[in-house]
Image (cartoon, rainbow, N blue to C red; front, side, top):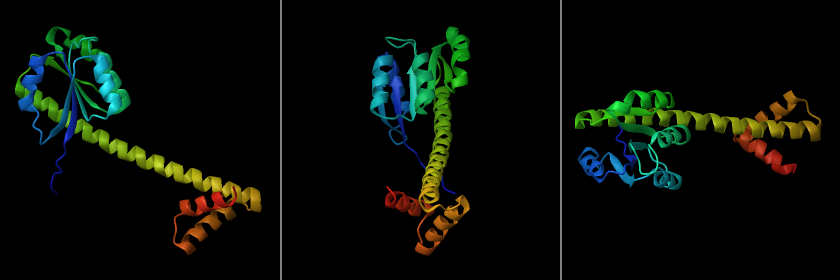
Length: 194
């Protein structure tokens, strides 16, 4: 089984120009694109409202906030794999605030090798999140189908005085006879009796 190559969109929140420059060789375009930068909490939030990012890297502190709120918000709301870079002396305190939200932390200064490993962790987490998103989407789709079929059954029960079992059987039989899904039959019933 061949490995699928993914390209991850990245938002880097950092007020440091030196940090941006030092990251360039660690983020090849073949794996990370687009890469956008924000110097502050507010500019990063604005960019995140405009598009979804796979990875968020926060080099603390930001211009208008330390960065933990952005990390927690992104991990909770957006399903973004997040890395928070913190000075060594603040590591334990910050880690204890953010780890339960799924935010990765890395003490700085750090080596290029440690940063590459952290990027690998972020990518692995993003793939796990992607699987959960697919599962959630599938469950939501199935729930919507069930709601539509149930609505059609209740229309048959109310208007044609069928029992619930007869309404269910009717929808299944129509689906088989017409080679359509139960959802399509239910939608036809709903539109017929509006």
